[in-house]
Image 1 (cartoon, rainbow, N blue to C red):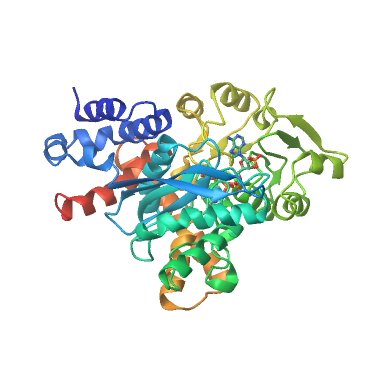
Image 2: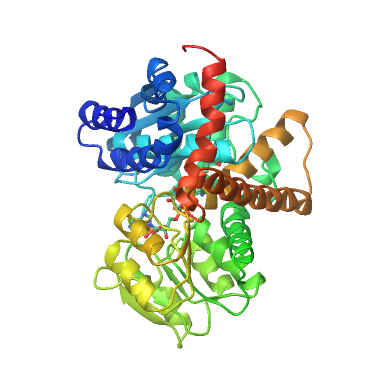
Length: 446
Ligand code: NDP
Ligand code: 2IT
């Protein structure tokens, strides 16, 4: 059996009931087959693949906190410190009831290659909890965040592991976590990114993932003789990534017409009103029914029966969560003339849907490249914290643009070099892997 297949079987056997982790590993290993098989004996002898699929450290802990009724609640806390070959562990914290170890491992594994693609010195990690911030009071969220950090603070630090936001973790949660870390350690350091601007945050970090997604999409289209101008864009999600993807899509001359949350989705033929969406989601923490109520031309659909992918569009940007775009959705998109897909979320497209897009000539950029603008700007926040300076919005935004354009060319070149031109999934995995593998090899058996 080939080394790649052997390692995949090992991952499935050693990590039972973690389907998302298996899926993420399978996608990467399939892409790496051509690289590994050219030098199989060396990689096998060094157990390079076994090492890269095994986290350096996994932290699982209890998070007890008291709700507004005086009842004690208990959640599971996670931090997976996956790979530190090229820098301190870096990656977000997800707060969502669906969080379990397998989900955090898939995200942490993806993060290794994503962070490598940014060209910045950051290793891969991810964490979170099955705590649901929805419907909780600010005091309850603070109680949870303080308890979470009271355990996690022992294992993180500006030069060891730097968490950030992800689903359910935004500026409010990062603020409470930062305050508790500082109180426990006495250190005023860049231990978290996505901080508020008054205490060490970076301008443009809030916008970075959505903006970066559009910068990369624009470059991918340009290199294929196409353009965003005048194109209809379907976006899923209505959170941090989706909102700023929609905003930048407008700025680049596109027309974003959809968004969604877990209860339903909006089709607005006039294009999504970003100011209204921000007011509902960022200020009121409300639902999309409020959007439809305020925009008579917009249609609201309950989640479940259909999805944003049934709307006719030229470009699709999934920005909500994993496996939200399946084979049926891919067929509908292709039938409606969609010619480009870029993932704002992590692994939002199932493997079958990805293959369908690729087989039908759709330009497809995977999340680990397309959404890397968020973590890249987090790394820029770390730089600013280290030098105790703040850069202007324009400075950070122009660095972000440069990074995204660079990522696209890096993966495009890797795909060409390894005989799979146009396969940006393979290009991203190979380019991300080569740097980490070189660093791991140079650092010996650790
Ligand atoms: P937010 O919490 O801000 O928004 C998430 C959005 O997706 C919400 O509209 C939410 O709806 C919806 N959603 C989440 N989970 C589900 C689900 N299981 N089913 C249906 N809808 C769901 O998160 P972000 O925008 O930050 O993250 C979105 C995606 O982007 C995630 O995959 C994340 O890992 C990825 N990402 C985020 C980065 C960042 O910088 N924030 C960077 C790179 C990737 P509802 O509110 O109803 O739950
Ligand atoms: O998936 C991701 O890259 C993020 N949630 C952002 C991580 C970060 O450290 O900014």
